[in-house]
Length: 147
Image (tube, rainbow, N blue to C red; front, side, top):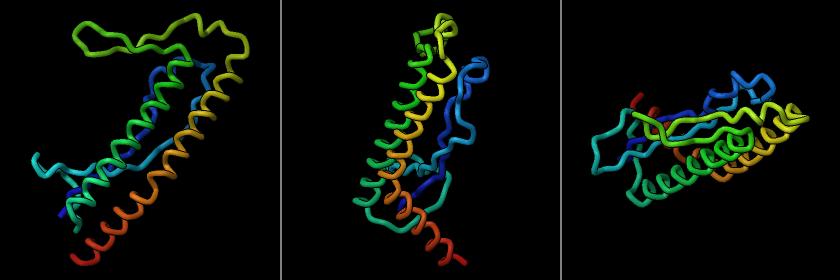
């Protein structure tokens, strides 16, 4: 049995709400399923039938998809002048560079940057889709077996 837990990935809301010129898309959410490591305490979630090889394949797909989503988000944040720096009492803190507020055509540039980010994220989502549908089919089958 493989333990899976549903997770939704969304863009980090800061700093978009304080940057009035930034054109962040609304309702951008991506579905993932965390796969429990058998050596660790089990996740909350659903137990589905599967082999260790399937669990390993799902975990590799999940980790790759999550890292690509984070990388796309970090790229768009960096292009908007948001930098991550070491902070006092925290591992990293985000710093917004004010000079990006003075760039000409910043609204259209922001729309273009977010459109590129969204296209990249949708491409990554399509690559993860076979694993996602396989997991969701297993969850539906497990729910039907218990009912």
